[in-house]
Image (cartoon, rainbow, N blue to C red; front, side):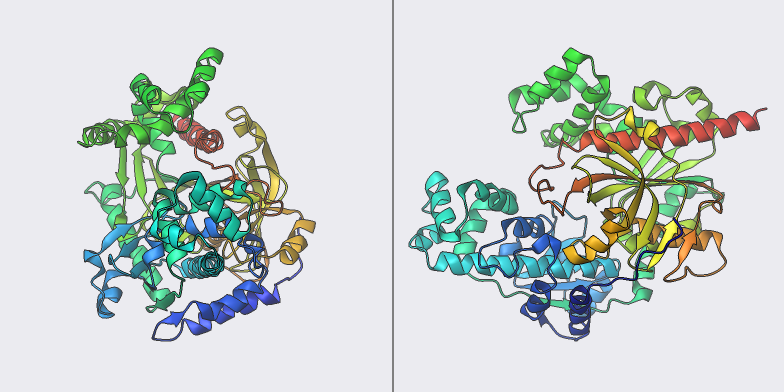
Length: 573
């Protein structure tokens, strides 16, 4: 295990990264076409068809899911770190429309015409954004050029072709099988009709400008983020209480601890009887027949969002928030104007009667005597994890546990599988981190139907597009099967909690016997890039991913509860 993986880089990937960073040093706009050649010749595993004349619909849909639906109208992107930077550049983005994406939590503002403001919180946002917009432009222009030669171009552009006739014309023009078109339609989402019309009407010539992008500003942004959380953490006092830190999502812990969805389960399920676009009715019926309370709970958690959206008055949302507050849960949706939401859970205020039965451990009533807080954050992208976690740990009291849950690609499993790593190679620091994972198969398997794999090795990559097959094969031969973006930066920050110096580079770092707190790392598979059989696009992790998500969250909450209860029992003699 002490063997360092061979020092390997992909010359093509490295050239691509150097290309866009050197170009983005310009003080003006840079045309995205300047990135296209190095992007195409990087042979990205996620964009294998970049140089092919036939559209790579999977790559286009992957990029589209991480861009807003207004993207067909966008001609210019401006990336910055703060409102002040945008204002200095003459852009009053605070008045612009907030827009979102399905696959990335990144603050975005659209001016309603042709300019998109993108907030970046670390260098990882650049490594993510540039390949995404480049892949989008390459595939858009391929498809537009093919549609220009189609006899149906005018009808597709003015929207007079609809339904099966439209799809037949699209498939013929693009040279793809009709069965591939749902991928294209999924790429445009709710804006499908407008997206197809735009695709037939005009090409894509994006420009990108990076305003500043300094390490100091990334740290400043993390400071603003923590300052917005700190007030709730301190509760108006000066005592910095013990913390269990969780990096996951913003729905799992409140649902498991707050109890609103379970208390209103029948009302939530009633929606499915009236409107069931995802055909979950049979799943509900089957879970009832089996008496599977865990599955019924997961279904109610998943459908809660639809239930809340159906109430235009906002009364249901207010009721959920009140329910959560009664259970000691406070959510901060946009601290410091960064889209990394945070939640504070006061363990002493947890209501045992409202807990999901899966997390109701022996002695849970003793938590009423706890002084500890769970701080859960919506897992950041890449190096933002390092900046945010470093700032958070500077501002809290005793750190009692760190639990990292997130999505990953798997090279040896299937979508939905859960992987528990004990080693991670970090592309940012080029360190190999070895650590003892608090979780093993037995801690998770009983809560899920998926396969759980422990003793895995994770590879923390700089960006989802920034690997190719040749590069990945080297790591695969060394047993690295989990591809993700946060573990390495978190471990670099953890290193700096236990050593009196900055984390090293290009070393094997043993953390197993050094940590004064618990460390648990869980990933659930959202993609299989080697085979491309199953991806987030071909089998959405929507409800399918709830089993894995909640299995991991249950394991984390049980671990925290059991640790704190044991501590309270020892303190009480």
